[in-house]
Image (cartoon, rainbow, N blue to C red; front, side, top):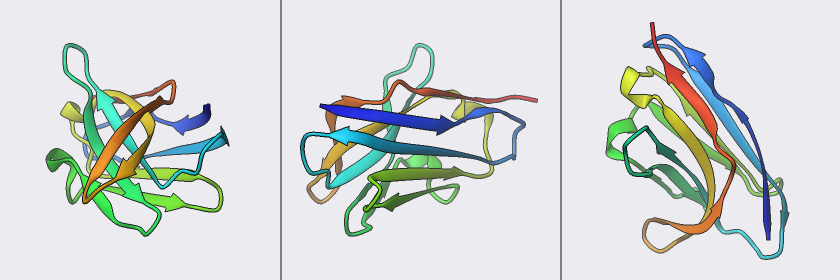
Length: 120
């Protein structure tokens, strides 16, 4: 029902920056919120950031002030700018289609994931 095109990620040194992008190339329903989750080895998947059609945002506590989420509603695209990256940001990052109800919540629609590795 939803097709994702994710790009970005890679290897960066601590303190560096990376950007992720995700475009929904096909959807059978109207999307009103999108976001990013991440999962590190042995860890649960956690919310990084979510955004609705009005620009309201929700960030995970560990990325506040360092990551910025943005949305292009017309293109069904969501972007994540990651600054001041830390080793603990290393994870697979997943694009997600969700919904908004005073905060961001995930639907069970996920991109394939893109690896972000922060290492010196």
